[in-house]
Structure formats: structure tokens, C-alpha cells
Image (cartoon, rainbow, N blue to C red; front, side):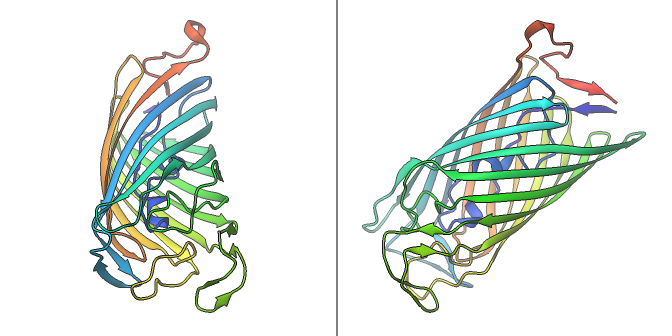
Length: 323
């Protein structure tokens, strides 16, 4: 069996979207750290991406409703990511999105700006092969740092939560010939955020401009077909906020609300021998709590090339290694 290397396969399954009421696009990294794709040593992948999400119904606590003062809330995300192969089994990934939000009704003005920088170290810790079967285990660590002083306390129009965080993920991938199944779990430790008011109400009155952000637990599963030229997969993900509180009746959401979501989607990627890769996909939030029932579509273009030029022993067009 050949060991497959590749660039990003976008998973716009609401990694950050599910954590934000507005379901804005992802912590750009979130899409790559939960797949089993790697790029080889001394290769660089440049990824340009776009996603669009919208919702007109949301869960106020567990009660699903619409809001005529909002209409349809939409989010556009334009992102750039870089993925570099330190070794065949160790990649570093970094990226940041530019995000815009808009409501089709009412008086709430949309917001726009650069969101957060996400940096990830992705390690394929071990691989076991037997015939056409391969099992790989991964350990992934990510850090998130807001890049601008955007306003987080204006949901659902905010472009993000402005929370510094550290994410730790473990992942197992099983592949038989070209068919695979991947499962992973993540824990997201989030720092406090600062808001532009000195008092606010959660379940009690708080006299501070500091908001204690609850941590988040996430599970992701995917299955599909994977070859050096084509990948097709179906995915499901669940995000659970470990704390927080529900949106009060007819109130605006708050950054430390409990924000749970289960989303499902599909992704497709086609790779050319020249090093270009084209991706498209979509997802829908199936169930949630204090989040919008978002539909999302995304697309992107990758370019994968060797930093060693023609002297690299591996082929630039199909970077792969025999088992």
C-alpha cells in the first residue's frame, strides 16, 4: 500500500462555527488538524479558501426559533493557510481568515476584519501496516491568538470570540486499500476575554470586564474514499461547551453562552500532477443549543511544491512513499 501525502482537505464542519453563535468560519486550522493527510519533508502547501454560511433559525437554549429583526445572518470567510513538512511525519500549519458578517433585516450592522491566527503542530506518531490495511495514530496541538482588536461582545454579528486558546487532539485513522475511516477527539482550553463594559449578567450579576470562557470538547468522525488524485468523504462532528448558560428569552447571545452543535457534511478534493489541488464541500448544523442552524459551502485551491527544487528525490507532482 502506498503512503499518501497531500495538502489540506478542508473540513468546514463548523469547528469554530459550531463554537460561535454566528457560525463564522473556522478557526482556519480546524479543518486540517482532524484529517489524516500529511505532506512530506521539505514540501510547502499554500491554501487559498473561501466559505459562505447562513442561517435564519437558531436555538435559544433548546428552543428553536427565528427572529424577524435579524432575518438571515450570513458570514463570508476568506482564508490563507500554509502547511510545511518538517519531516514526513511532522507538519506545521498556520493560517488566518478575513471574516465579514451581515444580517438581512433589522438595524444590527455587520462586522468585518481579520480574525485569529491559528498555528498547529501535527505529528503522525505511529503507523502499522499489514497487507492492504494501515492504522495510523496522530497527536495534534494548536494555539489560537486574536490578531486584531475586534469586538466579541456583539453576537451574532461579531466575527469571533477573541479568546486565546490551546487545543489538543488525538486521532486514529484506518485505511483499507482506498477506503478509510478516521476518528478524533479534541479538548479546547480557552482563556478569559475582555469586553467593553464593567458589568454584565449571566446567571448572576458580574461586576467586571473579564468573561470566564468555558472550555470545549469536540468529537469528529469521517469515512470515504482516498487516493493520490481524489478524495471524497462524509463527516460528522459534535462540539460541546463545558459550562456556560443559555440565551435568555428574546435576549442577545453572550460570548460565554453554552454553545453546542452537531454538524454533518461532505468534502471532495481533486489533485493534479502539477501540484494544484481543488476542493469543494458543504455542511449543515443538524442540532444545537444557542447556535444558528447554519448551512455552509466552501471551496479552495492548494498549491503543493518542494522547497528543494528539482534536487528533491521525491516527485513534486505526486509526493508519496511506498510502504
